[in-house]
Length: 459
Image (tube, rainbow, N blue to C red; front, side, top):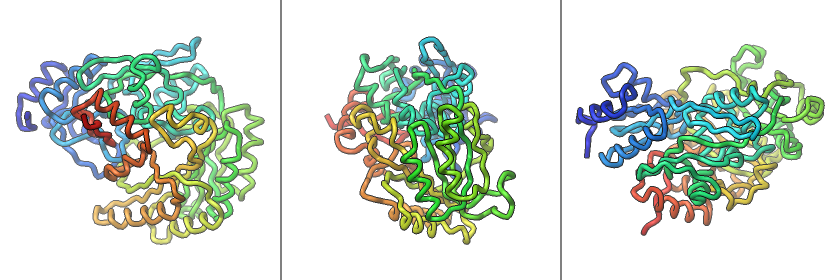
C-alpha cells in the first residue's frame, strides 16, 4: 500500500496532472485541505484538481490501483467533513465549473465544481431557476446527490426532482451518462443516495421559469403561539411558498435593533414564487402573527434569496436531524424553554415545512424516501472548546427527543459523523436493500466510502 511518506505518490500524480496537484509541502496545502465545518484537521497525501471527467477517471483509477483512500470534495459542506481524509487523495472538483444553458429547451448541463450561487446567478440571468438549498456556497453535486431541499421545494420538489441526467465516473474508471433509460438503477440511486456510487461530474437539470419572487427574512418574537402558528400557516399555504424558520437568539447584526440582540426570535426565510400581488396576500398571515422585529420580505429576483456569507467561517457544531409532524402550542413551548439563551450559548432549532411538490413524488421513485414527512427539523448547538462537545451533544439529543413523534428517518445531507445506524435511518425499508444492491454492482470494493456510507450488498 502506498503511504503518505512515499514521495513517489506525489511525483506520479504530478506527472499525470501537471499543475493540479497540491502536496503537504506546498504553500496552498492548508487552504486546500480546509472544509467548511470547523474542528476538522485531516492531512491528505495530495489534493488533485482535475479539469474534466477524463481527469476524474484517471484519479479514481490511481486511487483504486494504489489502494489509497479517496475523498471527493465539491463545496466542502459535509457535516462530517467527508470532503477530506487522512493519508489519501482528495479529488477536488472546484475547477470544474462549466455550465451549458439551453434556454429554449429549458435545461442546463452543469459541472459539479459549481456552487448553488454560481448556477443560480447564471440561469437567473435568463429568468430561470432550479431549486438547491439556502446557502450560495454549497456545491451543487453534494446537495443534489442527497436530495436537495431549499427555497423552492414546495413548488418544484427536491433538487433531484429536477434532475434529468448525470455524467458519472464509476469505480472501474468508466464515464457513464445515466438517465431514466440508461443505467436506470444508477440514476435512481444517485437521486438521494449520496456519493456512494461514483464521482458525478456533470448534472443535467430542468430549468423552471422564475422571473421574480416575494422573499427575504422576517424576524418575529419567539413565543409558543408565534412558532406553532407560523408552522401551521406555512403548511396550509399555497405550494408557491416555501419557508425555513430558525428559532434562535437574535444575532448582533446591523439590521437587528440593538436592544433585541440575544432575544429569542423566529428568524424566518420566506420565498413565494409567483406574482407580487399574490405574494403579498399569501405572506400577510405571517406578518400578522406579531409585530415584526425586522421585515425584509419584498419583491426580488430569485438569486437575491441567497444572502452574503462569511468567507472564512468554520463553525464547530453538533446537529441532529429528524422528520416530525405537527408542532402545537405545548410542544412549541417546551422547545422554546430548551432554547433559552440565558446561558449565552448559541443554539438553533430550524424548521423546514415540506409537503407540496415534495410529497407528490412516490417514495420508490428516488432514493430519498421521506416524501410524506410534513416537517424537517435541524437541532444545532454551537461550541468552541472541544471539551464542551459532549454537553452540546447531550443538549441536541434532548431537544431532538422532545420533537420526535415516531418517524425514525433522517435526511442524509444533514447528518454529521453519527455512525452507521443514522445512515441506515436515511434509507428506510426496501430503499436500503436496493441501494446496497446498486452499490455492489457499481462499487463492490467500496472505493467511495468517505461519505455517509452505504456498503455493497454481500455476494
